[in-house]
Image (cartoon, rainbow, N blue to C red; front, side, top):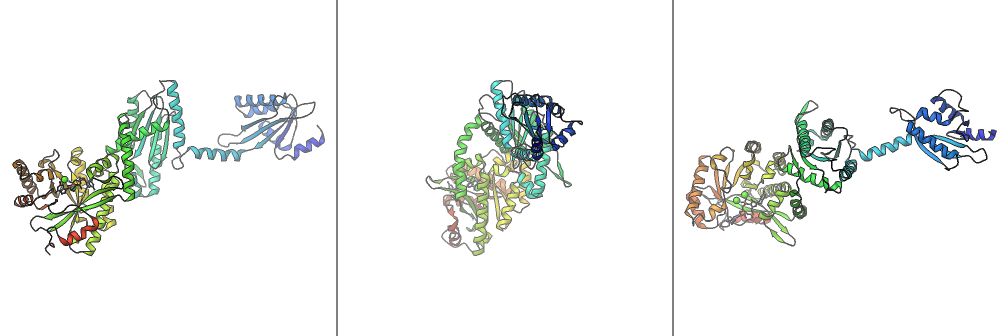
Length: 566
Ligand code: C2E
Ligand code: CA
Ligand code: CA
């Protein structure tokens, strides 16, 4: 070794050593000697470099380094580079090893070891962030998709390697955030993540997709029974209350379950189906799991098209509210109005509610639509009432769809709109149809009571078209009843219909309910209903539904071409 070479080594900022053709260390700078001395005490010069690697690395890694060095020493490779993990898991130290052949007849190699721990740490950080959810520390969507793709491929190779995906969406989580604040909402998500994690085996993957959505990839499931049992288990685990800041919070979730099949080519397809099944669980009122079946896909296509058009309509203001007066049969005065949604489509013209309401129900857009109609009509009545004292006393009837009614945060939403618009709640009448009452009567009663606690009135709409009898609706605390227009319309032609209307009105009165008849088209209808002591009526005879900006004039004019008596 020439003296200049030794100086050269010393001047290098990294750990550096020179090996001879056999891999024996013939020179090393001070920092390299110190480093190797830490690995094994004693003289460094004269020892095999590979011996230190064996002390430091796993057998496989050490073998790799030995081979790499050998190829440089023999001249078959011009360079060998390897990142070596030298520390302990708690104290990771990374060094980049680089070996290059030395020119000259003696052969040998120059080995440098650079400390790259900081760089590795950063890399790991970036990698971790790329695949993890920062809030819960769970895997994120990107990693989940990656794992799911592996599972899809595995199943194609081996039909036994069945997997299942559970797609979870917390019910009424918005409400949690609203009630307890976002900090608690976030903490709750962390605790939920923790509970879910405990349900899983090592091979399963739990990810948070953002918001209150989670997904579980279950590997090697036996079949549908296994997957369902897993979903059931999740529901049960979440059923126990969460204790945060001495408060008990209850959360439920809706789950969509998809069992892997050879038909799936891409993770997105699996997730789309899982999402649809989850959606069915929501429709069920939450706290429920649904296993995907192919029938859901056909519905999805149609739903998506209409949903798109309707969603745009809701945003672009194509949905407006018209108002039909409700008239007192004893005085002829307008006592209230019913708000009715209208869709003015730029190309298709008017689309009737009977067409778009069912689609709004099906797609869940009814929630937005219903809120829009309630908010808009409350605003309208408040502003009318400010300008016109007669209008200030008018009741406002708004239709509520079954799906809207069953939403866990429906009552809170109504309360919010009442406060926001400043309407007198006792003027608001929410119209519910019988279908709402059939599914879960106890829950319906509870919701109606909560609504009434807001001071709003509750009306049973379209009475007579469903299957419920008056004795059945007795269980529900309604304020009034609307006789469906199908009975009123041909009341005078068919004696039977007249009898039905008579019976409904008489029995409703016995239950203490006021009666509104709809579909009054002729003077004879009005007279007959007045004779039957029906309180109020609405129909084309009095007025068709009118746009909001015509309502003021209509109220001032009255429905018989005269001003309402003052
Ligand atoms: P509905 O609650 O029974 O509303 C009364 C319907 O009868 C309205 O139809 C109204 O225009 C019509 N009508 C009023 N007077 C007469 C009459 O004398 N003769 C006849 N033949 N019809 C009359 P519209 O506006 O087409 O609404 C149809 C249904 O769509 C409503 O029936 C209601 O169930 C639903 N709907 C309308 N707006 C909304 C809404 O904002 N939310 C919800 N959930 N449903 C709505
Ligand atoms: Ca109605
Ligand atoms: Ca009706």
